[in-house]
Image 1 (cartoon, rainbow, N blue to C red):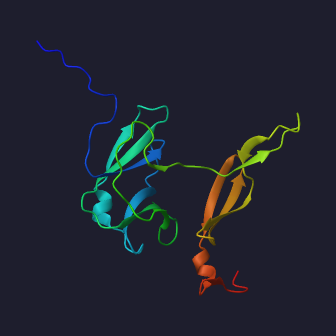
Image 2 (cartoon, one colour):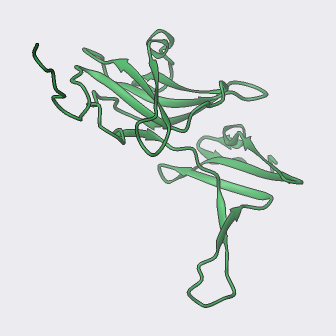
Image 3 (spheres, rainbow, N blue to C red):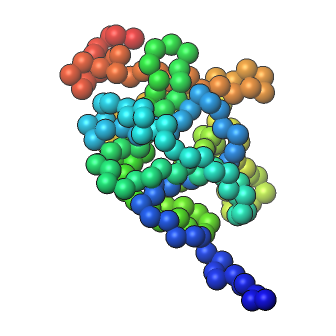
Length: 183
């Protein structure tokens, strides 16, 4: 009887895959990764739906891997689509030129990491105390993309619940500039 041994501790060989790692598991169904044509205007639903979701628990951080067969694909973009309560979904551009990515042992080349805006409360023990991170208070968070104000998020606190409301800045713009006294 021949003994079979482990050849390598690395990932198996795969050809022409696009792999995107989303940190964490059990994400809301109201957000998803979407493949979009190069113009950034047209979501490619059939291609988007071809993703295979794998739960990754081999590393210190649990995550989900979204894997597409990516042989002979034209130039496409990858966006994060978030459902809204009113109107069309919010689409956040993640990658402009999606390419084949080899599987990595732990951290994948393309990662989406959920974050919350925090503020550092300064400490009083010493001047070297950089503070304790706490959720930001009610107000606004501004997101810039390509040197332009792109999104405005209203932060609202109600007791221990913090919510974020997206303000559609496109509705307030006229010819790439803000229209006066529209608000």
